[in-house]
Length: 243
Ligand code: URA
Image (cartoon, rainbow, N blue to C red; front, top):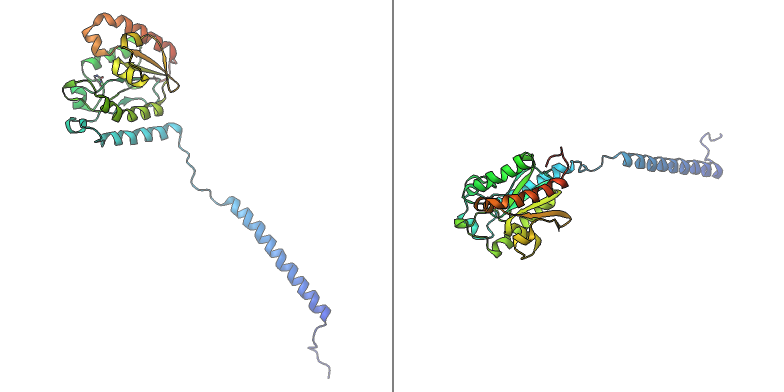
């Protein structure tokens, strides 16, 4: 009786093994190709896709919160409000004053008292800009008691806030109002009478020192010189863009 289940020849076994190896190899290659293809389509980690302005607005807001909670110097004990700054992130001009006075401390906004009204006139009537389109801030974010002059150690503590504000806004022109703003930003001790009337460089931004509006309230004849300085600023900015 012949065995219908006779054992396969060694050739047949070898051929079977070879085709098995080929098939496994093919599957591995297919899987590799598939993996690469799938891998390419794998969702990418969420990309940071916010407009530049939004990032800067968030950074400026975060900085304002940091200032609101600042207790680095004794002015934190006497202030009513931190006066961080106000205006447009896209401002072409940033005005930098000295420090909040009583009205600003009360309201938490810069230049809202008598000197502020004069600054508003310079911006609106003189420069024909809207106050909301410029940016206004101070060297110190908290009011020195009795409106005394800022102390060097208060300026040193507070200046990083201003530096970051200016870096984030990067206006075309910074207008430094008065001796403290001009001398602090320029790191110079030259009197404001000698500093005003020409542009300086502040980290790649044009900086014009001029008299403080509070000085103009006491010395109205100096308005002529401020007007000259302001006209130089106006030549540097783009008409029609937010200022
Ligand atoms: N004077 C300043 O220097 N800043 C103000 O905000 C108000 C008055």
